[in-house]
Amino acid sequence: MGLQEALQVLYPPQCISCGTGVTSDFGLCGDCWRETSFIAGLVCDLCGVPLQGEDSDRTVLCDDCMTIARPWSQGRAAMLYKDNGRRIVLALKHGDRLDLARPAAFWMQKAARPMLKPNMLVIPVPLHWFRLFRRRYNQAALLSSAVAKLTSLESCPDGLIRRRSTGSQEGRNRDARFANLRDAFTVPERHRKLVDQREVLLVDDVMTSGATFAAATEALFAAGAASVSVLSLARVAKDA
Image (cartoon, rainbow, N blue to C red; front, side, top):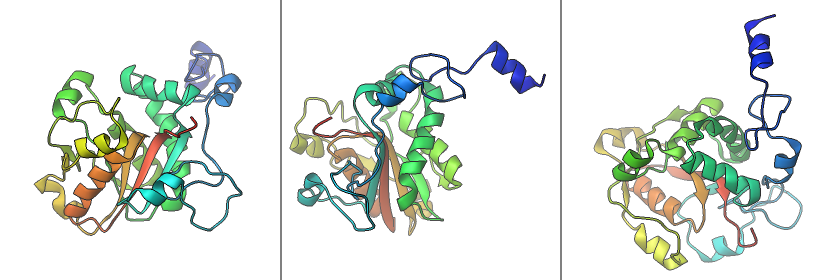
């Protein structure tokens, strides 16, 4: 028996969400899979939210993206932020489940395929230094590094910094969310040459109103980025 087989006997694969036995590592059991709303089919080209209708090559936008200015070029998400999708995000974000970054990145890179370009630079949405100190890790940075590895793209984990603490966005309406994040991000001087004239894939764990992605995108454009596409693990939808 090889080492891998021996390890599987001693530590059989478990569902990454509930711990039930499964057939392969980093997978979901049948029940958890059914409770995870993976996004597929026709989606909004700017935020990735699923739309009614059959998938096609035409560009389609949701109601929000037709009324709110989106500075980025394209956007995608792997799942909806509800049911087991929400539990996965919260476990990664607040539950020290760093192991979830690997399967999450696999789902994300599948969703990102229509946006990927050969020379893209992958950058995560940053935490403020004080929140990073308290949490000890940035879940967006874990996801972006894993996505970059899967897609063979260059990663810059500290390509953006959050120059002031913006607090939680919970409880704020859409306008307040955008106002709270205005000028919150910047590209540090040491990375400006790297970002200049590059196509950037900006990564975060959740997209709600798009305020965080918008503020971070504006900072990348201010540093000379040629284009920005956004990718999140989960998307909050109005009917979610």
